[in-house]
Image (cartoon, rainbow, N blue to C red):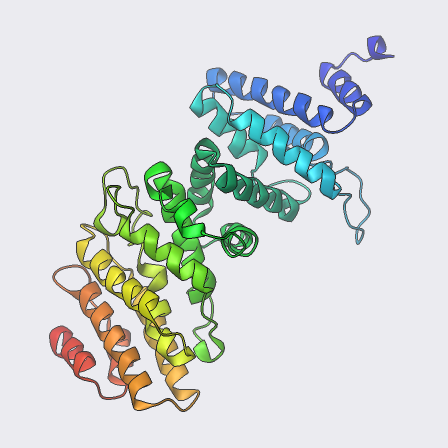
Length: 365
């Protein structure tokens, strides 16, 4: 039968369909590797070549079959098969191959195109979670490139961050100790993950209604603080340590500002938040050439106003929130870092009386 098939691609498909999973996935990854090798020599694949390869990945890596009727769910791998796929991908991406070639294969396999993008992103999140557990730095580096390409605040990046928080960071004992060296090992992944996790809880991309604000889990606050401060002897994200790649155009602290400002208003107190707040101020002041974009300051101010107007808070709670707000905004707007626009100044003027907020207004007026 195969001899009658003239198209080599069809012959490959027919052969792979005869194999059991995960052997079919292993062979599929080898084929994708070969194709990426060709692309590295011949240049960027044509739209038709890319479309054909994505269809191939959908069927033989993720088992998403073509021709699913509208309204029906696509077939997905069983839980056991998902674990087998994670092992196949992990073995391949930690193999002794050229880094750039492996990265190309990674980006094509997890390209957010095809039949079941949500499932593809979910598989990526599981692979990264597994890689955190076994310290597979190469895969985390590829993940860092993927998140950079998507941008840390995209829907897909947030989906990955949510999975890592719920299924790994919040379930592992001694997670800070286990992951404290991650900024030194994979700075691109760490800085992008901080930005995405910050966005998960700060919701800068959404409406600034903080009346329903939910603080991040304690384990996440501790871990992010450890990452920003840097492990002993290692690079510090807060000081732009050697080898640390910041998120382009912003400070690693930008998406975290609301965490410490809102903490006293949602009953989250303690040394961890105090240390994080001190670290955020240090990070902003020490970030040469890294600005906190004004949208983060505007969002923080709108959110703080909404929260203060949504309930009754003690003088101590209000004072601590405004003090921390004033310190962060002073650091963000200090020197030649950024110039506030009229809307931000108008919002700051609506905050309750506070000495540090008054200093901010005096400085920027």
